[in-house]
Length: 181
Image (cartoon, rainbow, N blue to C red; front, side, top):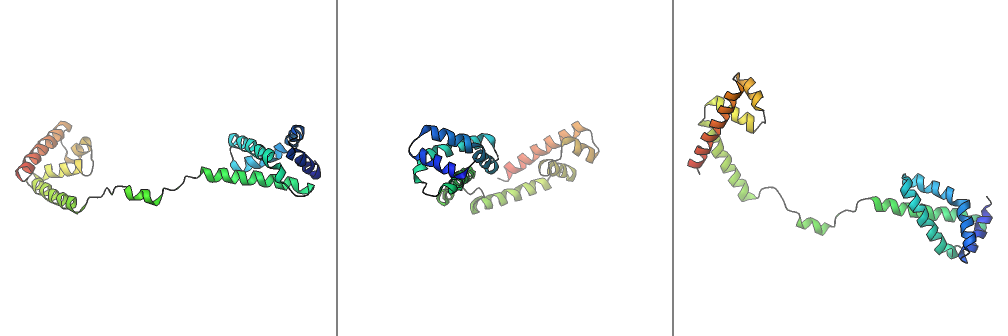
C-alpha cells in the first residue's frame, strides 16, 4: 500500500467522493481496527470505535493539510485519540464534592453515644444477676455468635437444655432491663 496513495484518497474523500471513501476503507480499515482492538481490548467496542473513526474521517478529511506520505500517521492519530476518549469514558467519574455534604454520618452522635453507654451498663448489671454459666452462654451466643450446638458442646449439656437456658436467660434479662429503665 503506497502511503501517498492514501493521501490522494483522503483528498478525494474531502471532496465527498464515495468511491474514494470505500477504497480508503478497504485499504486501511484492517490496520486501524487492529489499533482499536489493541487499545480497547474488546472486539465489539473496537468495531464501534472503527465505525466512529470512519465517520470522523468522512467529516474531517478536508482538515488534512499534510503531504501524501503523512496521511497514514494522521489517520492513526485520529484512531488513537478516539480510543483514548473511549477509555477515559469507561472510568467512573468521581462524585462532586458538594454531593458528599449530603451523606449522612452513621456514627452515633454524642447523645446517642451516652444512651448506648448507659444501656450497656444496664445490660452488664442485668447479666451479673444471672447465674455465671447462663450469663457466659448469653454473651457467647449473642455477642460472639456461637451456635446453640457449639454452646451445648462447650457446657456439656443437651442441645434442648441450652435452648432453654438461653430462652429463660433472655426473659430474665428483659425483666431486669424493664425494672432498671
